[in-house]
View: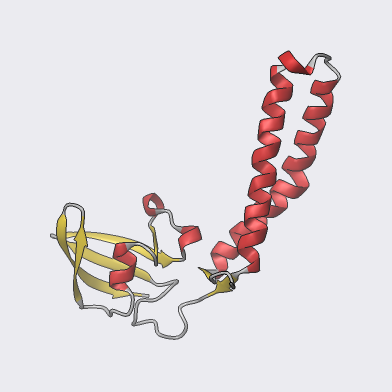
Length: 154
């Protein structure tokens, strides 16, 4: 069964590639050195430094594998010429009950709501896709329906 495409912006792909480079070329060699030094201290069964280094190595190797798997199935998407229609890569300003907020629609691997990056897989992202500036969209949330007025799309 083929793996589902992972939608990502070009900026998101660059960040993943930079993280992969850092993990494989900087952090991996550092952790190998820490493990070697910890081994030289003797008894590994009660060596906290060795245990911590091995746990960190496991995390680093797992993240490297995860990024490599993501990049195998990635589809880079840009706001393809439809600046007026919300799609992946769109930066939008919305109005909710008199307050305005600005965020970007991104693929699920880039989602970071605290920093204004809303996933296409989220209920808000799904509801806004395909809409234009001045559209009014009602979105169901756990706290009830919220009305979003789309102020601008870029």
